Picture 1 (cartoon, helix red, strand yellow):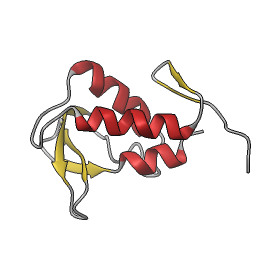
Picture 2 (cartoon, helix red, strand yellow):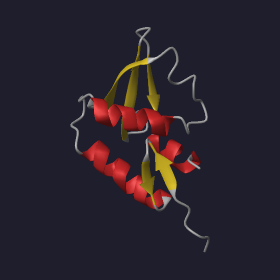
Picture 3 (cartoon, helix red, strand yellow):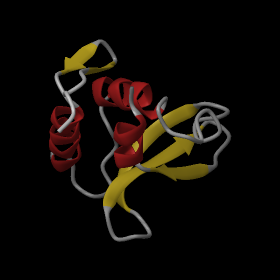
Picture 4 (cartoon, one colour):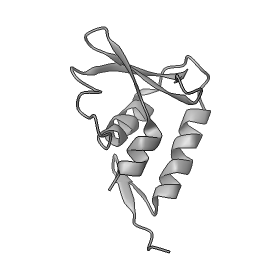
Length: 100
């Protein structure tokens, strides 16, 4: 088994990716479907989303707000509402997986 590697998101250090996964599950779980993230949670998620393989395309031309929604696969995730009026979903689990 490999050594756990700590990861940092928005200045917050997690001892291993599993701790970040638990944090994200807790973050998503505190919202109801359709709710928008608070400014604090939005900032944290935007930092995490930098790990997405389609970043910065997913966030371009800028993010107005992020909403908790049920995604196509039936999982609860995030919908990005962009400044240009377009929307895009994003997988926080993929961001955690890619975080270094």
